[in-house]
Length: 449
Ligand code: NDP
Ligand code: 2IT
Image (cartoon, rainbow, N blue to C red; front, side):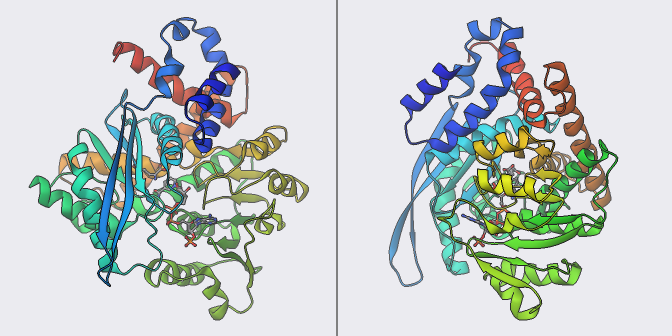
């Protein structure tokens, strides 16, 4: 297995996030390969790390001053063994092929866990939306779609949002797709609810993450009620994670953005969260603004060069990283244990470094990796596709109760797979194995394609 990882590194040096994601999955699935020797003969590992297709394209656009800019657009269609390609689009300056491949790879196993039939993909651009006007965002999205449209479709590849892509961007992308194809179809998810979006899709990732956390705590006869919670991020996933935690009686004391974090000892409530939504979603401003309205809170600027983030060093029972990959370093994980943290549940994709994951695995902390814990978002995207196919919309209660059932079944699938392959209680092993087995058996059923 180590040789195999070395080969991947040598073949595509520089794709460090992709190597990290592959190493984590392959470490877990060793016992599956040992139990199924035919998998090696069929080269399933070699096949599963190679994207079925990578689309890379130029995205030219004009800013409000008439200046032309050129960004790079990506869609990595990783695996379609169990359904059409499905996964978000990320607009962030850090986007490159390695980041896209890591996210697409993770998406394959995550989507497999949802119980729905969706393959895995990811796309996006190194475009930085910060400080751009609505018109600039619209022109960028339109230019992006003038190439992407020929590769996607409601039965082929169904993108959605991710960092930097929310309801506004999905609207502009959909508008251009519809014009180019002369077709109103469920080609994107995360649409607004008055033209085909599912209720609860915007909240689904965060709500699902909290439902997963509640399931984990229940295995120890514990509840979220009364527990102090640290949440990072202040975007889509962080907001809905915090909201559901507050609903269930948790005390959320932190939120962050790429500049810094707030600490509110009194805990957030519905009114404070409404203010966060205003600052981040409408004004598109900094989380620092929180302190102007709530001077009792503290604000700390983030130093990205530190080997730890002080946000994770506050006393708490539960941690919900909901911002960015590798945001929890080894020292953060050690600080959490030192402070008596009981649970870490990942809303963001791969937010813990491998060294931090090792700290969690060697401890008694309940640790849920992102591909299980944040699968609620893409699961409700799958429910949006189902509703679009039927040309009807379910009420919020229906979607929410299906989301709960899905998160419960992912939790159970993780525990079952972990126990079956000799790692009882490991959500990391369980998520990787359960996700992997379903995809690989579908690949083998479909022959060498
Ligand atoms: P948003 O764009 O809505 O929010 C991203 C948040 O992360 C913002 O608060 C942003 O701050 C912060 N952030 C960005 N870069 C950094 C950084 N380098 N350090 C610290 N904070 C940072 O994105 P989402 O909430 O949708 O995504 C958050 C995470 O959840 C990502 O890992 C994403 O892949 C994952 N995810 C998203 C799903 C979805 O449905 N949207 C589904 C499953 C996972 P700022 O405002 O300063 O940029
Ligand atoms: O990482 C993710 O699961 C997402 N960004 C959501 C993908 C989707 O298709 O809803």
